Each structure stands twice: as C-alpha cells, then as structure tokens.
Length: 74
Image 1 (cartoon, helix red, strand yellow):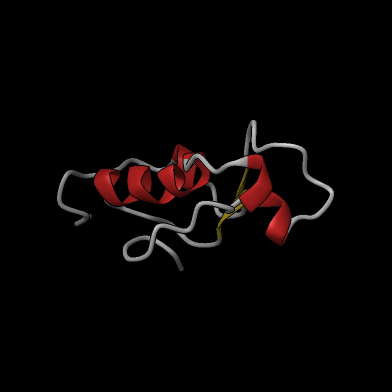
Image 2 (cartoon, rainbow, N blue to C red):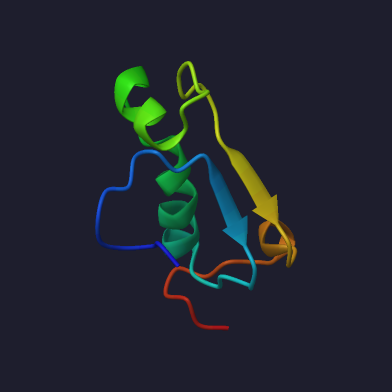
C-alpha cells in the first residue's frame, strides 16, 4: 500500500483492493497515480513508454461507490 511516504512518480496503475473510509486518505491514494515524471525517467521502469499521460485506477471493492468520512470512521 502506498498512501504516505516516498514520492513514487512512475506509478501507472492504482489498485483499490479494500474499502477506504477516509476521504482524505482516498484522495491521497488516487493522487499517487498523477505524479509527473519525465519520459526518460519513466522509461527506466517501463522501457516501452513514451510518456506518462494517464494512469489506470482499478476499483476491485467498489471503493468509489462507498461513502467517505472526513476522519475515516464509519
């Protein structure tokens, strides 16, 4: 899980495998996919990539449909 900590710019796919109750936490996790990276640095991890123009978000648990709270509690 990458929600806090290092700035991992080459992330091209964000998977949600469980519910996230906190709106802030959810936005932070989605935000990992929008980090900007130069084409040269992206090709270090994905040699066939030309540039990072988008990322894929996979919601395996319906996280986007669940209500969120400001403090993460139900």
